[in-house]
Length: 204
Image (cartoon, rainbow, N blue to C red; front, top):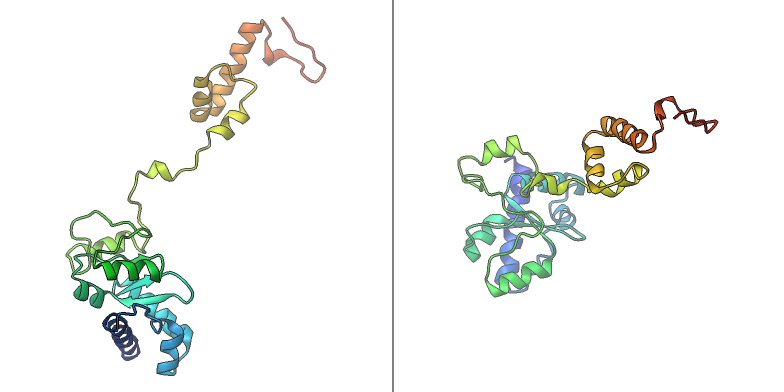
């Protein structure tokens, strides 16, 4: 790390440890604004470097205003966690967990279940390149797709005679529509391909 980045990291380590040792768990100075004041540098530069260290898995982020950053190393060493979350919802959640001396649940960023993907392990660098950033899919990808069945059913409601018709339309909209027209013509003895719908003339 460069000198400025080292200085910021050292302050985060100091503030993280101090808030643990005094049992306040407030971490009130572990933010870009207070660090910028102490080092007398621009806050935007501090924010950029904090975010960079967060993505390097050196820091843990606590959501809120202001955003708080903690030293991952201090949290892991002081509380003997085998893992620590990347993001925590709020300070109160962290405080309760630390007081209870139990591992912090990672509700904002689920564990990535690949052997070797954790901090300091052999595959972490490769995985971070393949799947950059903090958001990773840890569920069935189809669960992330918006349910469009109601929309599709509304589009083809004039042709629906059974539930399977909606599925056919969802998979093959043009082919299914042509079939629905053919089926209607057979049922009503009207050839819709020859119909003059504008003048309401339907050949039989």
